Image (cartoon, rainbow, N blue to C red):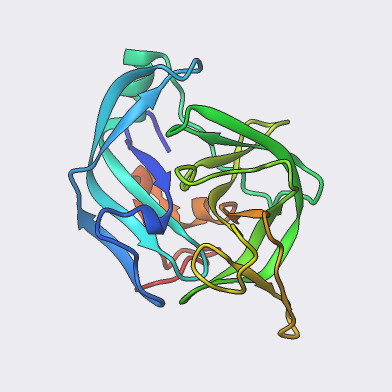
Length: 221
């Protein structure tokens, strides 16, 4: 991305104002009038930024949405001295120290990458290669869509999206892990995020989404 590109905001597909996308549903280039609070390093709201498009949104394979703002990265940096977070393009290793940064609650949750779920099933949805946190990240409702940062680099390695709240098996708010052999594991109290290393491959010049680019594995409409 260049300074004159419209800034992008990441959240979950389940946080779209249009409601939960159905299994297999992918939204691309939809109009939006959503607003976002821009926080500084102290958690103070310094501006309200507005989106004009949903660039991408799905709950299939991953749980992610990207909005395009009416403001550029350069304008945000010039006006507020705040740089955008950057996606890491490498899969985070097991044991990586991470922090989930919640703008909604204005707090952080620190833990490690505990491992990966081959498939994570929650109700009607299935996500691939989800990041499992160690138990120290006790994320709660309202942390959905938070960036997950690699503490060593400050780069985004995942987007926080769910957790098993009360030991339910593969139901809403109680995701289960399914391995390649179909074995189901339930981890009550454990929380998860969706990897983002592959997202930059889906964007061309001027931060334009192109799902046909080499290396782009995001689901297509």
